[in-house]
View 1 (tube, rainbow, N blue to C red):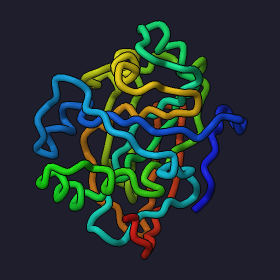
View 2: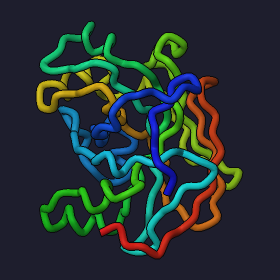
View 3: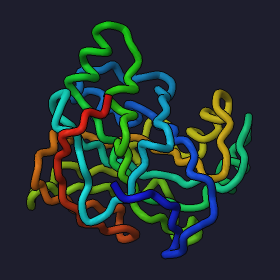
View 4: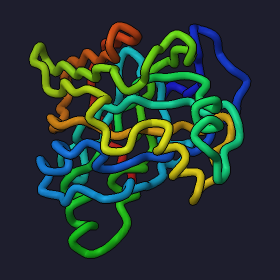
Length: 227
């Protein structure tokens, strides 16, 4: 596995590789496609720094514990401390914007949910968060008008607008900071639009965020257990 580094506008940054704070069901259509209730407040969970991997020419998924699903998300690189912040502080703390895959062992996740157990084994395993280079926030325009697209083997699987987020970016950071202090080098995943599905060995993926980010990668499987 390639070592992950924060890269903004092509420059490697001397920032810690921090935690990844994720929000589940931030798009109503995605909640419904998995037969989950649409939440009234953000559903938060954390991936450790070891889940991060560069969205390189290829990404590796486990071949054990059932299907591994893609969930394409706009991700935010945090550049300053946030604790019980206000909206302006939240907006000023965003250093860069990128794309991440919230890889999910869906069958294992379902088993854990049915037992009332946490999701970490299904969503926080090593390499579970392939992440692109970031674009500096000043080049990104309105974060609530971005288009997230994932193409799998020539077919569009996900095509959603960040305007459909239940909790928009600024409010999401404010909410997260009430529970978890965000530090420079942390990453926030903002949720996935509908259309998630399984990956298999040899899949060719094209991911894009409007005209800001365009990335091609290929999927390979590993025999190593993420557990």
